[in-house]
Length: 513
RNA sequence: GCAGACGUAGCUCAGUUGGUUAGAGCGUCGGAUUGUGGCUCCGAAGGUCGGUGGUUCGAAUCCACCCGUCUGUACCA
Image 1 (cartoon, rainbow, N blue to C red):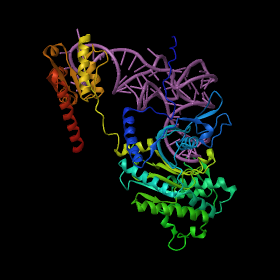
Image 2: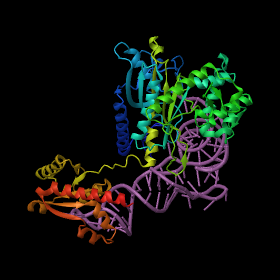
Image 3: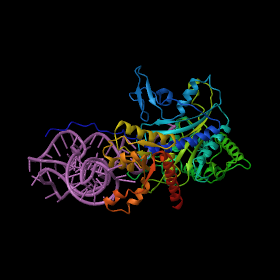
Image 4: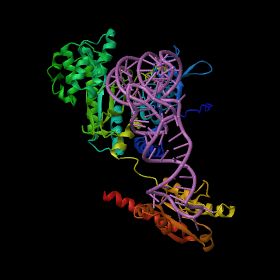
């Protein structure tokens, strides 16, 4: 037997997805609502390309065959390495630096875009995803950070997430640095262990206090038997860090009525140092600013356990967390974590310009947020009605022109409409097409109707309901359920009325549920 | 990256201790019905059994390696 020629296998690279009409419409709606908030705060859009020279993106340098795992990189024909952006912050720093003389600082700007990460994909975790960022560049004061927190809060509520269903948690890198210094990890040589401790703290949500205790101590073995080395901290230091993680607000840890002192048992064994105090002062200021503007701790909460962006954040860091349960398609509650975050990055522009250009900003994970909102039913249910289908019973040019005219009249009246573009000779297929496409109405005009100056208008939704009561095909066909005859010049008005009735039925069905 | 589980038609899955031509349901397409969706009936298409190599008279089945999916974990700007 002759082997069949190998057909090309149609396949998508792993970690990438095609987006459906529903996804695109839902995303557009989401982006629109976020944009409205940013615009109201006085931010302007800017867009940068998907590719950047690799060295401009940050820590990855093109000195090996592949610049690094984590980024998608290619070599240009002049042999310079370029990479797909993995966030929107580094490209913004490049844009500002390149145009520093033309940009009026402080520069308030927002942008949405696809970013790419070359890492292991998982459910709800892709190698291409969308972020929507806002940044203020050239603003040194923490009032800029406070504004970012308030804007994140407003954004959550603009998306229909009720107050109490989310919280913006704020911390400061300087506080964490101070704690690390206090427990004896302040030295140059302790960089790696500091990272280990911070990563362990970041796992608190996932593993709980006991898991973190292991990671801060000897290490932890996961359920597959794989072992993660620990930070080997002194037991007093471990307890101190766990006190921080278990606190829900900074007031639980610090007594600042007179002198600044730690309240809790283990932390009290350590001294408050300069870093800690500087960080704490900034946090207190942010707290006072947002409270002054009416944002209480149910919206923006100072929380010393927030760990983010270990590499480049220099001061305040903040993240938006959802507090309601998010379930997956199997109905299981999933660990959702944050849907957005940011912080102050005073060093990024300086890398290019040598000038101190302090900046702060945050990023919303659009794809993640959309998953959560979809499960909450807060988005994407604004259904778009499929087009009215004008069927074709006669392929003669004059007849086709007549059908086209009907379609154009409907469109001119603002009604989505299309003429059947498949093989018109099989009429049954035209209605089958309309049915599967969820068309609300089909228009039929054969020679009989044409001679009488009439059209048949078929309510496909009502017809589908009636079909449940009819069991034999002859009756089904001859009764022509939910079909009315109208004069051709009344086509648009009749369709409009029918669509309005259908919309009313849908509204009632939703209310009745 | 590390550890484990899994991989048979478009989808969900059968397939005996290794034994002839690998099956079912759903879906798709065609017909009954060339001017009416659904139901019903009839028929058809669709498979390198994830890939490669090995053991064997003989492999979907046993072995090795590779690829992919899922779970956990590491990294995550």
